[in-house]
Each structure stands twice: as C-alpha cells, then as structure tokens.
Length: 258
Image (cartoon, rainbow, N blue to C red; front, side, top):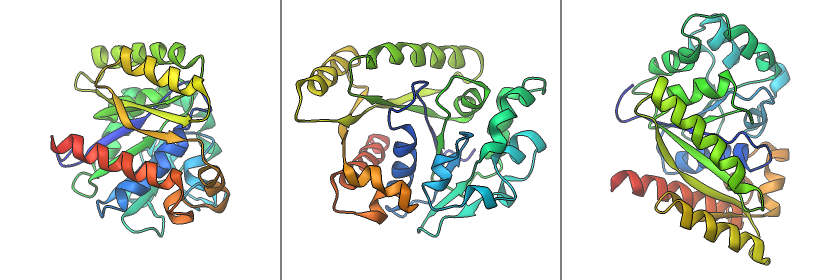
C-alpha cells in the first residue's frame, strides 16, 4: 500500500454507538477536503451503502465477491456521485461470509490483499465494520493502519471499550503489528445532561491523548440524513452534526501532519 494511503477502520462490537454514521460522514468530510476517499462497507446490514444513496438490492457485485470470489475491487467500486468519494458496497450477501471465510487459507488477510491493489488511487480508505468481533472485523483490522473507536456517551461505554482494546491487542500481536489506535471519538453527546459530561471526562482521564477533541452531538439532521441517502454535509451542511464531522476530519488531517 502506498504510504500516502491511510486506511482507518471504524470499529466497536457494541451496536448503536454511531459507527456507520461516523464511517459515512467522516469519509464524506475527508472527501470534501478534495482528498480521494474510498468508503468500504463490510457490514452485512449495508447501512453505509444505503447511507450514500446506493440501492443495496440492485447491486450485481459487492465486497462479498472480493472476499469470497477474489473479484478485482476495481470492478466493484461505485462512484457515489459526491466529489472525491467512492464506495465498495455491501448487502445481505455478506451474511454468510464469516462462515465461508472460516475454511479459507489466509482468511484474515483477504481484505488486506484486495485493498493493496488500490494503492495510489486514494488518500483515505475508511472501513465500516459490523457490530461484532468476527472474521469481517478481523479482516478490517488486519488491512488497516489504525482503528477509530466511536464511543457513545452513556453509562456502559467503558465496558465495551475494554473488549475492543483487547481485540486490537490480539490483532497487533498476531496479524498486524503496525496497527495503531487512531483515537476514540465521543458520539451521541447530549450537552443538556450531566451523564455525557461525566462519561467524556472519565474516558479522557483513562485514555489521555487518545480521545479526539471533537465530540459528535445528538443531532436530528444527522439522524435524518441516511433516510435521504446522503452524508449529513450534503443534507444540511449548517447542522451541528455536519460541522462536527468536518471538524473531526480536520483533526485527523492535522494529527497526521504533526
């Protein structure tokens, strides 16, 4: 992979933490800075695919074909119609991929090999993982340079965090020694209550320097955008959700420069 290409997987085995929302909107926000960006959907639910306006049911080729049939990813990539943003789509075909991969040689590295053939084409590759620590997520972490962990500002947040950090440690030890933690991004933050502030403060004290300054708020526009098949910056760029994801993208770019 070209050193200029950065692969970030968005992972958390806990569902409902804003993982797909982060993958779609971070990818769109990076693309908005005119950096060619590829969004890779490896979640069988295919929500990142529909969130960029693509009809999942009409797809003739998906990530499934890349992982199981070793299809050339260049024939599967779709232009989202948004400048600088392409996607490797997914749909329910991926549901059985975990079982099918289980008996395949080099099963943890299928995605890594596929993405290696796309070097020089993209500045950023953002992978949206399923909400479980299965072979699809392991493929994403093995292919990635770093893991970005969305963390909902709620009471049980820290519990799920220890589990994913353990998984990252195992991947580093066995499959991808260069895997880094990109950072923890606090999502669904409600500034009106104390709980969100308490969770944010606790996470920052436990993981100094690893939590992004940008906090993603609970935001109606952010929740509405997927039903219109658009990242929030193309649905309502003035909304707090759009502003915060653009800010997160800037923070990632700035950290790289430093």
